[in-house]
Image (spheres, rainbow, N blue to C red):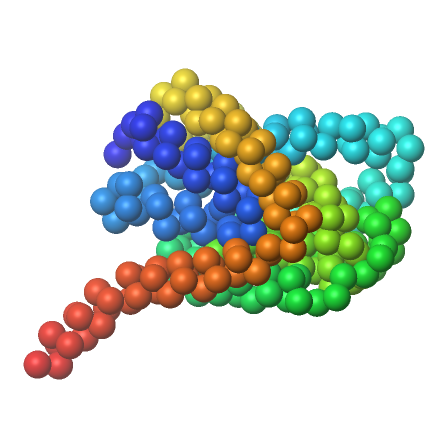
Length: 272
């Protein structure tokens, strides 16, 4: 089943928008792929999503280039906090990639996890934020933000939404929680990309699409990701995180109904 260019572009736009908005990029890709490919997930689908994630990784690096430079030159403590917070994602991500890849592509699981993302957004919106900046994080608090990032490997559970909510929960301001969330994404996305490159080199990962299509997709996800980052920053400043919660509740209900309806219909036929 070939990944035609227009389909790759659709997925790239979805990835670019949803990676940073707290609505789960993996969840949306898990839902959109079966719709694009006749109910089937094509070979190399997970690998292609990681390629698209590389585009959004570049958008983080460009958007936060000054902060990243400050980390490297002046703020070594935050680098330590990011390293500690990355450990859970490494352990859980490697385990699921090796033994549970099918879980990461499940639309039904995405449907059940989207309302959880919605609850996280309501918490981030209504919970009184702290006054601390991400530079003030203790290693223990950084660890818990990392645990939330690791759990967000599941489709439908937003990585940005989970880590922003946890950051607010441990006493960060909302803008600072968002900044740490996106800085924390850099090693996570880079690590996933590195594993994918190793699989490609070893011949374990095959793509049903020309390499040029994937490169174009990564570029599109980068451009769209830049706009999405700017959008989320403005909405954070205006206190509109709860709008994303209502969207996640509605989409989760639709996806669950879509996935369970054939099972219900089959059971009704069987009982007649």
